[in-house]
Image 1 (cartoon, rainbow, N blue to C red):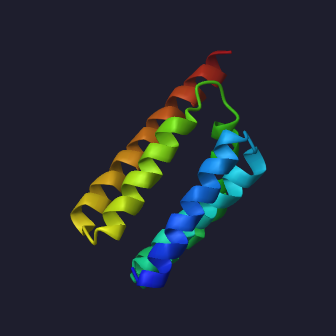
Image 2: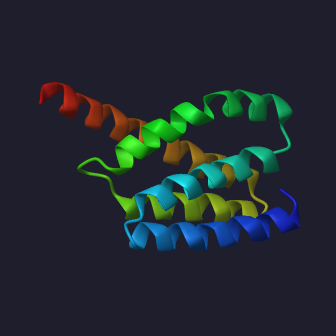
Length: 121
C-alpha cells in the first residue's frame, strides 16, 4: 500500500472509532465500507478487487444488520481494524493477512450466531 494510502487508512480508523463510540450506525457502516474499499484498492490486486467490489453492497447490508444486533461488539471491531492497519503500516503482509482472516472469521461467526438467534425467535 502506498504511503499516502497508509495515512488515509490511519485517519479513517480514527473517524471510524469516533463513529462507533458515538453509536452512529450510519457513519459506522459508511466508514467500515470505506475501510474495506481502501484495503482492496491498496492491495494492488485487480482480480481480488473486482471480486470484492461485486459483493460490496451485500457486505454493507449484512454489516448494517449485524451492527444493530444484540451482541455486536464495537471494541472487537476496532481492535481488528487497528491490527490490520498496524500490520500494513509495518509493511508486514503476513501479519496483515492473519489479522484480516481473524476479522473475517469473527464477523462470520457473529453473523452465524445472530442468524441462528433470529431464526429461533
